[in-house]
Amino acid sequence: MKSILLIGLGRFGRHIAEKLYELKHEVMAIDRCEKRVNAVLPYVTNAQIGDSTDEEFLSSIGVRNFDICIVAIGEDFQSSLETTSLLKELGATFVVARAERDVHAKFLLRNGADEIVYPEKQLAYWTAIRYSSDSILDYIEIDEDYAVFELTLPRQWAGKTIGELDIRRRYNINIVAIRKNSRLNLNISSDTLLSENSTLLVLGSNRNIQKCFHI
Image 1 (cartoon, rainbow, N blue to C red):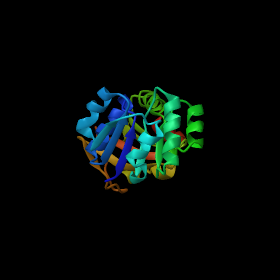
Image 2 (cartoon, rainbow, N blue to C red):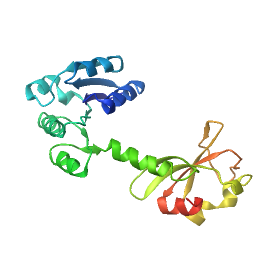
Image 3 (cartoon, rainbow, N blue to C red):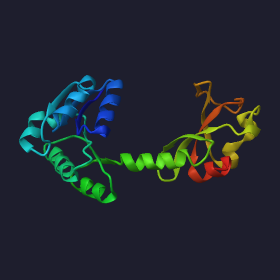
Image 4 (cartoon, rainbow, N blue to C red):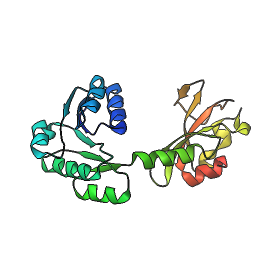
């Protein structure tokens, strides 16, 4: 369990709060808008209405006591930048800040952010890749070159073992799991038999996966 300070409770911040609640983390939420604060009360440990660009207010929160500080402000970049900078000045251990553009990310990193998230950009990439082929069911980017894809099993692979297909040697990709009837099998070996209506979770370079699955 981690102690998390969440600043900015728009749609992005609210979704973060809800997920952190599911994961059973302790969350302190802050926003200027009373309506937004009230909306997340069921999902957070504590919440306050306040201006995160006010040094006195932010200092009273005790930012050093949190494992992570998340700046989820999206509509006001100046406030996001000032908040990020203040958090670091006040001794925040780790600051994650939201950015909408690369230039925003550069300023945030120079002013205290340890990591940047691009919600719109990252979702746009996922949507473009997910719906670019009927065989792609999900996609998780590891870095610019490598990813994990969930793909429908090619028809000609049904009834064969992973060893028979030998795709690790032929394409330099790894089958890390198989999903069948909503159940995930992580116990994969060369003797694992592939059956119809299965999906594969494969890890490798984007180029090799595209070549192997013709996507």
